[in-house]
Amino acid sequence: MITPSDNNVYTIQQKYNNRYVDAYTDSHDYDLVTLSAQNDNTQKWIINWVPDDKKFLDIEYLVDEAEIVLNEPTVLHTATMENPTADTQTRSFSYSETVQETSSFQHSAGVEVTLGMEFSAGLPGLAEATDWVTVTGRYDFTWDEQKTITRTYTDTCPVVVGPYKTCRVTATITTAQLSVPYVMFFQS
Image (cartoon, rainbow, N blue to C red; front, side, top):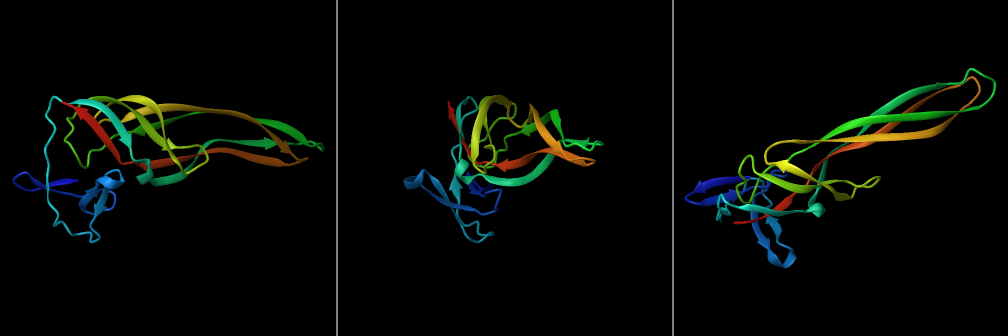
């Protein structure tokens, strides 16, 4: 978050941990150095804002700094498989479920971005069965608006049900909410 202090002087505070930015180092890909005290806002910054006629060039996700804010299972489909016979049966569990995901970009530091500005960018997401953040797909966005993406999950798998038994089968996915810092590149 950028907060004005006085004439063209600002403090910069990270939104996810409330630490104030103290410096950056160009020897390590411009990594930020933050002040350890949560309420220490003594470091001031002079910011040269990008002109209004800027053109979006690219976005670079800082996936090494990504945080998983929410990570929980989501039920896609549940079915009950009954076997009223004396023989073991193999039943088929099939589903096709559609899930909507939303993505948005929030501005917390750097250049001022005009509301309604349009750009195209890939979206970070969790790689399947891992905690690694990957950037997948490419979508068009309007700044300060949410983008809804629809995904369909489909599968069929065998379920062995013993004699006179009932099985409850559930298909789940893990839904994650990510906080991924990024750097946007502009040309004016």
